[in-house]
Length: 359
Image (cartoon, rainbow, N blue to C red; front, side, top):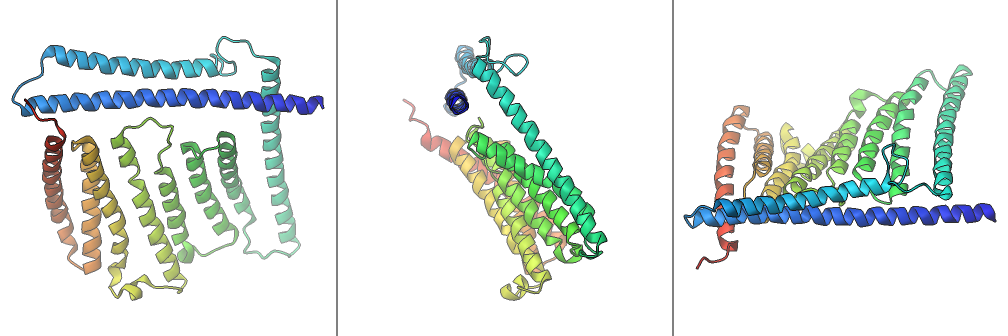
């Protein structure tokens, strides 16, 4: 009974700490959103003043800078307070408050459980290696079975286990979870290919599939990450790149196994892979347009997205249509110039439509 009561108290304390962190994260996010609004309003004021033929006064600029600086300082204080509430200088205490006995016991239990889990994991890994070697020596497993590949699988499984553990603990798919999951899948794929003695000339497209899936996963933006609209849409361009790489890997793998031929299905030449480049082409142009519509400007990240979209579109069309590859560079240069002009004109038109009429 006493043990159950102890663990119930630990669960209640853990839930309270998690609620406190969620509250602080919401306050920090609200602070950064206010900073973004202040910066956008500042740019709008400057644009309106320049369009009206007048320059903003030094006092107006100073007031706007001070206002943004105040919001930044407030957001920074929120971050500092969050860490002070959670940890002391050693990272083990809660601010200046002394640890309660239940907190000390909970931390000790967590450390013992983590150490015990690691010991069990590596113990099972060594047992598995020994059993495989014994079976191979006794002739139950063929010589083509590469038992040493288990040592490649161990860190892969450790990464996947860490991703699952972090997901259960935080109850959300954070950037760390996505990163560990993607790297774990890549490592385990390599390990299984060696372990099962699969032909790399036949199954190499599997690496494209898992690598593309890793890119796709890491393109998702954590809702707790304090990023601007521009950064968010720039990072999420990885969705399209990941889908393109996964699609290419799947198509190459099906073709290698003689299960399905995209080339025959589309009725095109050897440049069929250019069709998959339409995905990042569309993604780059769409995300650049969204940034322009959201910010009423054409910032440098939007230019990069537009250039990436035009380059993917050009290479894909040249491959699909079987045109001269020497056309790629000049077409990309011309397309980039057109994209910059159109993007700038569009941002100016949108800015004029959304700006209030001047008296």
